[in-house]
Length: 185
Image 1: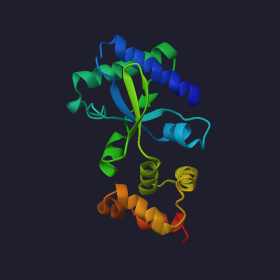
Image 2 (image 1 turned 180 degrees about the vertical axis):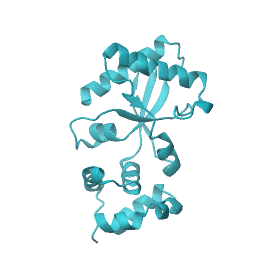
Image 3 (image 1 turned 90 degrees about the horizontal axis):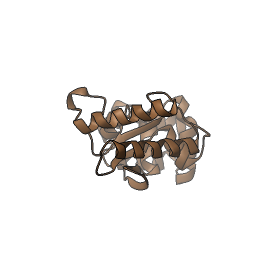
Image 4 (image 1 turned 90 degrees about the vertical axis):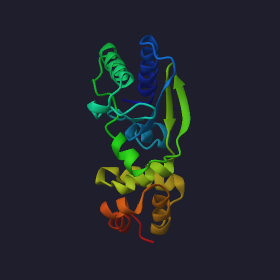
């Protein structure tokens, strides 16, 4: 999906949430490829919209799903059917990862679409998450974020990660090796 489609789909979801009786906007935080598309501009499209539900339990654990969480999922599926897009067009599969690694993402409000308020973590937080979970397919994202943030050296990258990611995760995910590979100074 491209930039215009992302905003259209989010507006459709906000409208669907209103039709389903949500009184207050559901707050989501965008992460992943759609963040790179919308905020960094280093890609033309993305496969889906990865989000963290800010006020609702994530949908990955059926045991903790509330009535509102289930209603939210139903609204997402209704939009998919109406627009003839894949059912998993918006998902919170990355929520456990993001909450676990970066519980304070410095999120700020971006836009509201009806009963859907969309928040964005800081670029620094996204770079820290990309570095802690580095995969080769993330290289262009890391390069784009590093350039935009002025992160040029290994020490600068380490300081940025230290702001968001606990030392135990850095050790468990071999951050030192990743930084050695990506930064030469």
